[in-house]
Image (tube, rainbow, N blue to C red):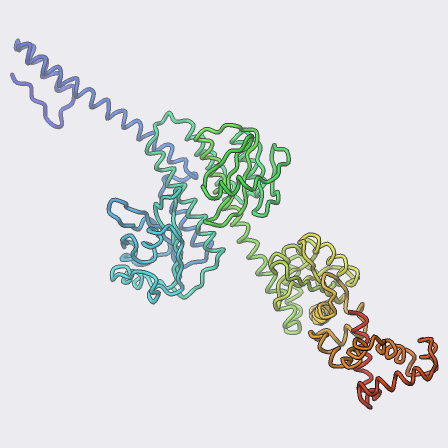
Length: 592
């Protein structure tokens, strides 16, 4: 009998053949050959069983990723969230096939075209191919007509079939390696804001982390407890974000997972949260290194990770109490920074939405207060604002910082803050606008380290009176700036008649020069003080006797000086119109 091993043979059938050979009295050489084959089959089957066990453990670990069943579910969740957060018509994700030099469609959300869902792009082709090739975000408000991109018939046909017009694409990066592209697209023209690019970049980073997790899971066995622990921790952080967790709760979760202290700073170095750690100073140099490398960086006694959304620095995480970090914990720390970036951007999006609602209320209140006052009052009440109580209206101005930052600094003082007509406007539940303006000017100037001028009016109650108060506050801040009172605060009533007249006047120097220039020039050349004589004359009601007493000179001296002034200003300088202009100029001169 000859031992035969078929492709589908198992060890039992082979053993039976071996026994048959023994029963037939087969030679030792044939028995040795048969025995060797049996052992090889047993080894192959054992390897298959080990591989099967490893794959089972792999799928069990992958099922824990973000409490979803597989990495595709994570990617679908991220792509769907990208479309929802950006308010886009379509979102999709492509992954790179490096050996083929192409990038292919992996996940779509909102797509209706089968052709589009199956399109592939060569590296450098179209918007996505260029993103994949250059590792840089690209955006267009009209793709088909945009000549920056290499158009192909296949890509343009698919884009037209889907009806896409505006497209934004950002790279999915692992370190310096681009593994795919995440997109958001609209079927109408759209300009993509920097904040939207940053948010999509953060989601792309999150998608890259999910893909990286899947790659790691392909390489580990069931016994890799460290990676499972890292993934479960990432799950916990992602779940915190999805359930609406705030920054302190995320910081507490990271501190608990890493068994250390956590301090979270914003981009300016302001502490946002601190858990199980003493106060620390933001390590600026180390943050810069972490930002450029995209990795956690160690100092003598801490670890630092930059919180990034694409190229934008959103803040930094500092881990204390851990001099050494293993690879798994280090990766977890870095993933925590990605989750933190996502949370910060989500909070920014919510804040921007709230600001938009408040901004719309402020704009309607100040521009069309009489259109529907009842509706305005109701909208304000939904935001927790009672416009039936007295409010002061204030306008802040500075050239040292952006209006957005100035508005943010004003938030803690006001019931309602917004940017209207290129001005930062505050409504404050206060009945003393003048002292309030003085206080805000001093405190804001100190906080922002730049002079802040504040004009105020009020108090006023109800939409129309508040709109009127806004107009007065606008005139007040312009008057303060025109008078050179930069960095001061006042109400319009504090400026008296000058403030009422000069709220809209901007070139006071030219006004003074055109009105009093000949007298000022004469005084400058001759060393005289005819301006003082002119002021005393008007202060005494054009009474020569009282003027000479005020000036402590003889009445003839006063007459001579007035004659000189007549020669300089003209014979009609004491007419009512000219006299008013001259007195106003004198008043401005004394104030400024």
